[in-house]
Length: 283
Image 1 (cartoon, rainbow, N blue to C red):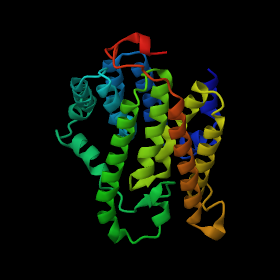
Image 2: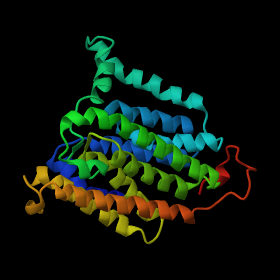
Image 3: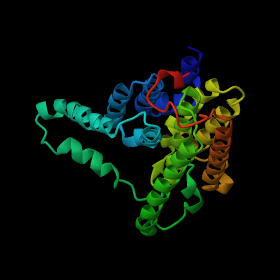
Image 4: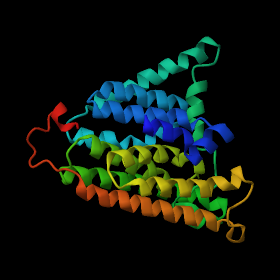
């Protein structure tokens, strides 16, 4: 109840929904349900909520790397990935009934990947340091950025697997928080709003692990800096202009580093025994 109430009054949540009129709260809430059902060891239901979020926006993909770790831990089957494809198709049915062609809703999702050309759209991402770069170079940077993001996600998954980190509520929420901020930080063409899911999951993480409220404060500070250009019509620090994004990006680096350090304190399985699906690993 406390988490829910805080979610109603945190500054970036209010700006995003009530002032800006965006719908990030929908896929953000779906992300919470995904983690909830993963923790409850209900993978099929988790995949249904992945697809419901996917039918709204593609950003749920930020945390899908969790499935890779659970697959290595023998808790997920690759066939579960077929569930989102089926359920997404069901969400298209109203469009088909209304008379749209078969490819119209599919093309809508495919077109999103090529909608924006700016390397960053007021996001506190890695590319805030390249904000002034000519957009003509963006097509060359994008493939590199996608490859870098994939590589880093694989490295994080492998680390969790190699370190025999136990699958429980702490590790799942922490990994969700890591990916929710790490992926949009490394991907190009991100909006400032694409860190919304990270703000939600960092709030959950602060309740999961004591003494982590500073992460919520930092994420709100970073979000408010990037939101300012739209919400206030100008930067908090006008004299440095796009340097405001560099500040937000630096804050996000600190958050990512602190989250990665927290992985050292997660519980480890003493051996490979008992890696079969079992509720005992879920706290």
